[in-house]
Length: 536
Image: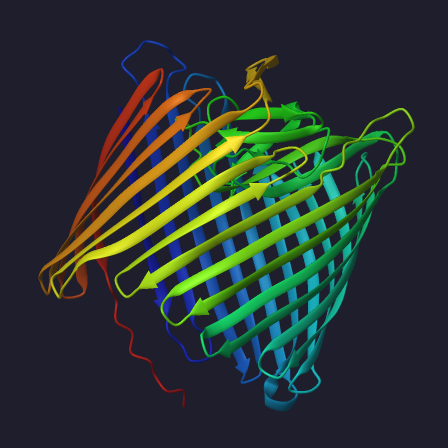
């Protein structure tokens, strides 16, 4: 049985010189089952107060302020694991515009985060960015940053400097050149120095057939490690899950027992086995989401961990990205995109490091009409650790569009051919328990999504809507998965009030289990009109 309560309020202060917003939100979820197990209860709580205001000091100068206080509570079903975290977040961002037409600017930012409890993260940052518009077609930028980041038992201090230029040639060609260098000092762990340069060209010009555009970029990165034979630290690395592909971490030789995975706001902590599994491929580590877990497809998460750094471990990486497309006036847009990456790894004599080279190409086309569109793409990815080929198709259509009715439909289909196997690692409450290799040789995966949305305007103050989504996934290793999501809503507006009824139902049919759930919401909203006063 699932019980969920959610309420909140927001107050806006409309002022020409200092608009502000105050908000409070409470969320509590409780999940229990009809068993006598004492640890079979799941709870999640999120209480937060937020303030945001912008002081318009003058026409050229402004100061944005943010403050947030929050309390997170989470207890997991089937375990005794529980997390409680509270914290305060403060940000001040000052912007000064100057020069002809105020096209040059100086932006200074300071932010502070202080947390207590489980998996606390403390942040202190000061940064400044200067942009100088020298002419209509030429500009330069400069930036400096200091960042102290402490998460759980990990702590780093980062010093970063950046400089670059942008040049506009007519209306068709934009060129940029950017450099940065950073030094990261880690408490009781390995220190790093990194240098990076980026050059890019963007071309776009109309022709008699439509418009042609192309982008070319070259990126060079050099990373040097010091304090040999110690652990490197990564705090809040961002990865995005995309079914059926695993999401690989940036570093090699990851200490998998140190992995901490949270959502993008860090309000929810994801657990191994329940929400994700770990895949090991040589020295590389990837995460694969569990369909029955809390991580959604296309969701971005933050991952913190440590990894082994051996003596004399330096990396030089060169990457080239290119894309071109022709937009025809008839609605057809063929395109090509390619990426090539080469790594040069220097290491100790008796240790073997595999560089991650990339050779990825995408060739496709889209065809758009006023009420429908279709597209297809062939993808070739000769990655050193995850080679595959894929075909992608997509389409959407407006089936009905009138003043009172609108019905939309969409569909996507992807077919993947993989050429590798993975090693799955799992945990229980006492740590790492076992590893197993699956998927020898070639394996395939098919992903089909079908969706529809309907809106009906009953009258000016009453609107009904409904949406449905079906997903089918076939995996030659794990079998077939079916998922259905359905939602419906009815909204009634009475003056400044709006009353909204929502219902949701979902089913997930896996090869060895069947999950389904339903929820019902009642939402009441009151708009408060604000009459702006002209300052005396």
